[in-house]
Length: 399
Image (cartoon, rainbow, N blue to C red; front, side):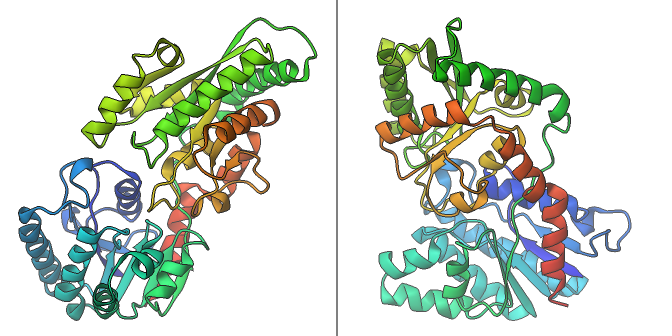
């Protein structure tokens, strides 16, 4: 099966662009760049239009005149590939609830859709359906339904995500969890013993079974450093948790590492102002954007993963999948698809970004969760092999 992939790969680097890259690599890459044609083991042959409209995170969803020219250029490439290689299936990633991104999608659908037999939407962001109902005009909703009119297949990441696809009346909807290469295939030998030892230290301390030496508990926030993603809520929650530990005279101190780029200058300034407070500076550090060995080191050395997000388009973020892969206890929000992707009866869910609730959840999870259920859940649901097989089966059903 030949598939036109109209979606961008990093940079800029975020969950959606990373998953598109994994899909392309798993399906053999761009067929035009291979020495010989033919389908791969998944029987899908990709033709990639790297539809990168933004140079950096700060450009995403912003209006820029050059983007109009880029839309025309990318659409021209797609139509050329359609006739040059006989590709009849058009795959793209719909916009989240952002006005400029939605306008872009209108134009892409208007220019490209008439030339392709099948249209496949992959809903990496959640919330467009609700956003259309509550945040846009009747004219915008009508234009969206007209451009998207029932597509052949919608790929959603979770059952929560069904509403977006149903709103646009997709003929067929398939649930395909995200999946990543196992970042620690040696987990049982090199990471699990350390996790168990650290958990036993915490359990005994909270249970009052002994009087251990003071310990530092490492907490990691790994995401774009924005208010919506929860960086400021994470800081506030850790400070409250430290105060609660001190009041109860537990010999432990929480150390938060915030790893990720700032998207806006104002939020970066606000973060730097917070660090001028000695109480904050001793409990919080900023690692910047991390990848490769540095990212792996942080995930190995961390005791708890903290992600109190309220991001509008949050769906099935890769950072939580990575945290599960590393067997980390997790505290995150009861928001969008997040509860659905975590192990059943997960005790680390909070309702929002209230510091007191986050602090209480941190202490409860540290005392009761070793992280091993998270690792098992990753292995059962979020491996790259499972993701590619399910994705290929869903796309292949269009033939």
